[in-house]
Picture (tube, rainbow, N blue to C red):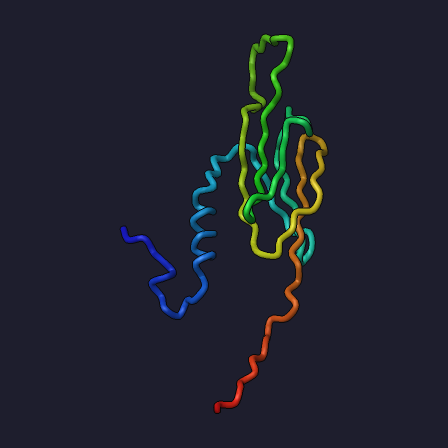
Length: 138
C-alpha cells in the first residue's frame, strides 16, 4: 500500500505540519487504558475526563509537549507489602497522549471521585478573511 503524502499535491502549500500532526496522532498508541471521555462544554471549550481509580494527584503528571497533551500515571511503591486475593483495579503505569489543535489551551486539572478532569479552551481567531493589497507595477 502506498503512503499518502500531502506534498504530492502542489496546491496544498504549507500543509506539511498537518501531515506531521496526523502521523503523530496515529502513533500516539491509545491502547485503551485508562478509559476516558471527551465532552464539549461550550462552543469553544472541552473537558477530558480520565478514570484513574487508585491514583493520587502525586502519582499523575500532566504536561503539554509540542502541541500534545501528555498525561502520565505511575503509582509510588508502598512500604508495606499487601496480599491481594483478587486484583481487578488497574494500577499499572500509563501514558495517554492527545494531540491539540492550534489555539487550544489546557486550563486547569482537577481530581474528583477517581476521575482526572482537564479543561481545554480554544481561542477565537482574530479574522478569517484577510485582504491583500496589490502594489502597482513599475
